[in-house]
Image (cartoon, rainbow, N blue to C red; front, side, top):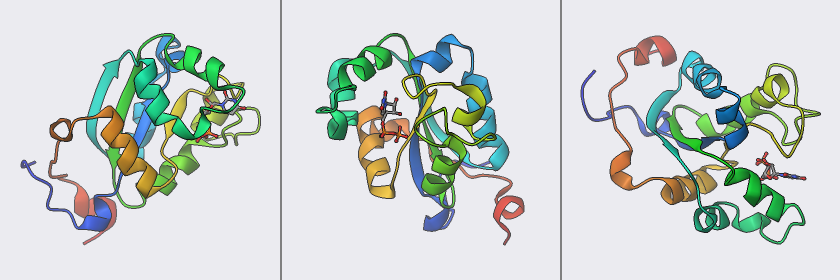
Length: 161
Ligand code: UDP
């Protein structure tokens, strides 16, 4: 593998995934990472951090007026979380499908939420819901130089020539 990503632009779509504090506490980080790796997506950034309110207010700006927001904030600041950027063809849509419904109770079996969680308030992961949202969210959680462009040695086997 060489440094620098020469994959065509459609293979360089990126999304933000957060492994939320409940999943870190429950030792599910590896399970979540494994699903994205196994699918064939490429990990381009990752860190463990304790999020603060300022960051979450930006990340969840659309939800700040919701009645559940104070509880969401308490949950998301209750312990460390893992922030990751995954790259690949159609990664935003595919990742949402792999994550499952917001409400864990109705998330399909086989999805991350459907397999690992019981309740909407402790639903294990976040994944960006559109390409535009992903670009904005990645900017909240990562500096530009924290994204690592690298050449995937198995690209032809993953996508075809
Ligand atoms: N959430 C919650 N209660 C609700 C709805 C949402 O605690 O009734 C939390 C939950 O952690 C969810 C997050 O708020 O993942 C963001 O909600 P959104 O509707 O954006 O769902 P997502 O995109 O995460 O599936």
